[in-house]
Amino acid sequence: MASQRWAQSVARRLLKGVPVHHGYAHSSRVAGFARQIAIGERFNREETRQLLIAAWLHDVGRSKDTKRHALISAEIVHDLLNKEGEGKEAKQNIVSAIYSHSRLERASTELGCALKDADMLDGFGQIVLEREITSKHPGTVFDQLWESIKSYKLPDEMRKGVKELLESLRTPLGWYGLLTTRTARSIGITPYAELKGYEVILKDLLAGKPPPKAIVVTE
Ligand SMILES: [Fe+2]
Ligand SMILES: [Fe+2]
Image (cartoon, rainbow, N blue to C red):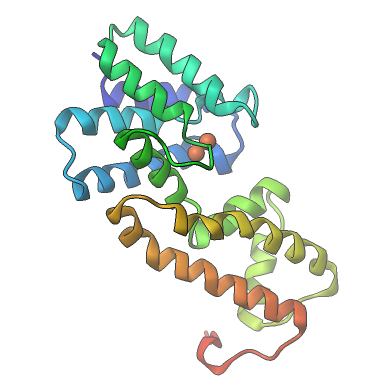
């Protein structure tokens, strides 16, 4: 029977080289959210084990293909679980949750819903700014953007990047309404509000508006 520890070590191995926004660190955070959801939704031991394995391994197919990664991850995990001698029912639960994690429609199982929620929770708050920026502008503009947000001044050369960033925040901002578990909605509300706040600031920066008094950052 596969363990959460085993899944973590497989994730570390298979996610090596996957860009940071969907690599090992992302899976590690998703596993953390999954654990909180399992507690909040009163999953039993076995359901929790299955959910955590799915969380660690849900993106392992990313290195092969981004668009079809859910299907590829499901296939890889299916084979790995076979080798681990995982039971038929648990294997089916884990693999189907992974297969459905990146679809827009609601997952058909409780495990699938919990995995989707855990994955989407990693799309709110400051972390998603980092994920979006590092995926599109590796290693460069995050500090500069932070300076702009603090000083409320946007250099001309950053306007294009900020427009792109706003565009890419649209999808994660739509995720809050798609969360299905009560626990995920309560974990997500604060970082979601934080991300909404960044959206307002970025729009204001582009429009050249002066900073509202409440968010002036002083050092
Ligand atoms: Fe994914
Ligand atoms: Fe993911």
